[in-house]
Amino acid sequence: MSLILSAGFLLVAGALGYWQVIGANRVLDRPTNPRTVEEERRILRGRILDRNGEVLASSERAGELAHRAYAYPPLADVVGYWSIQHGKSGIEEAFDSFLRGERSTNPAAEIRNKLFPVDRHGADVRLTLDLQLQKVADDALGGSPGAAAVVDVSTGEVLALASHPYFDPNTLDEDWERLANDRGEPFVSRAINGQYVPGSIFKLVTASAALDSGIATAGMEHHHEADLIVDGLRIRNTNHPQLTDLTFAEEFAWSCNVFFAYTGLSLGGSSLIDYSPLASREPYTWPAGPVDASEARLREYARRYGIGQAVPFDLPTSAGLISKADHMTRAQLASTAFGQGDLLVSPLQMALVAATVDNGGVMPAPYIVASVEDGKTVERIHQPGAGGHRVISESAAAELNAMMELSVDTAYAQPARIPGVRVGGKTGTAEVSTSETPHSWFVGYAPADRPGVAVAVIMENRGSGTTFATPAARKILKAALDMGY
Image (cartoon, rainbow, N blue to C red):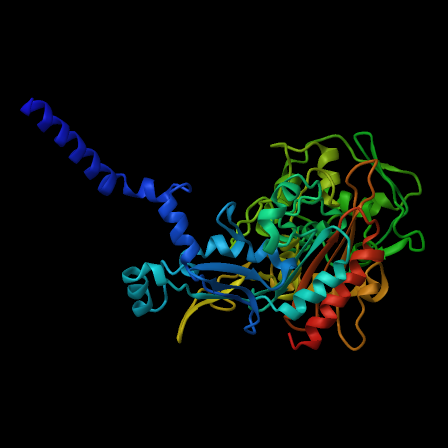
């Protein structure tokens, strides 16, 4: 009996020791752990602020428990939500350790929170977002599903991220079942995780490859009347019926699919591209033969711009897609070069493409969290302007910049004009299926004579980029300039 009792005590002591020391974290991390849940409900989480100190999320005590409130629900995809029942998302999740007081920029506050966990206070997180500009972006999108991303070109600060439809995190628990089954997918942060066919805005990448490689110049002149046939795919010359003698820059401004398909197929050369086959009134058939070098160069420049890779950012981002296949057919390469094919991009990625042109060929490193603040102690999370990388040469960027301005001054992007301001832009009308209305795109920046503000706007299934996304982007750019950016 003595041995049995001793063995029993040893078993209990061993189990207690294991769960209190070795397995303690597993117990604490269980979402069903009542002690953890109760502790979470008592923590006074830190505030989430915009760049000017406007409160976006805050906590108040109701008796012993804390209640989380969100001042501007359209920012739910960025600020996120905090829920005992459904967990965390967005900034609430990414910077949870600071907001809940587990980590602090203030050593004294960190010690206080460990000694008195019942009265724990979290640190504040300040974002780069400008709430007033954010409201303009949301208003510009209106009731259209879609997104807008606005970036300060010289610093990489993200000034606005609008995603529609959105949800109200204040009523998340009550609305969860409806939101989870909503076909509009309000939980998807379209601005950073939306995956869209880019259409003609991708011509920025194709043009970059040609100009930066030295096989084309913006001023190259040629006569163009022909359609292009590539392995049975007929690409029609319909975008500039009023013009037959054009430059490379004008083909870009008038967004010619034939010209950019031809350019994409020709990227593998080492000398200037010969556009003379497009002069005939009869369709030009692309000759048989490999286009591996052209495909490799287009892929290279797409990767330089970050397409096919997740954007390094404070929140999780989607990578996008260049092609589903390891090797494209000639027809797939032609379609990809003018923005169709298998391509998928996010609005943030394309805002950065535009920012690169405005920034002399250097892509800024984007960020949305400026600092963590606990009392008078402030820790900067990022340094403005740090971490950027060169994508194309300064001379190629200058040519692209002039082409973007030409598009706004004389061609399809004219609705982006702002009196007295040089604006660069590119429209896109992205085909999504034979039965659906195309997506409406615009990417651009202002002013075009110095690093300013870059924007990407997509309005899902609205149609012409000129008619819908471009006027919306103009409102955002105008407001940003009026605010001093």
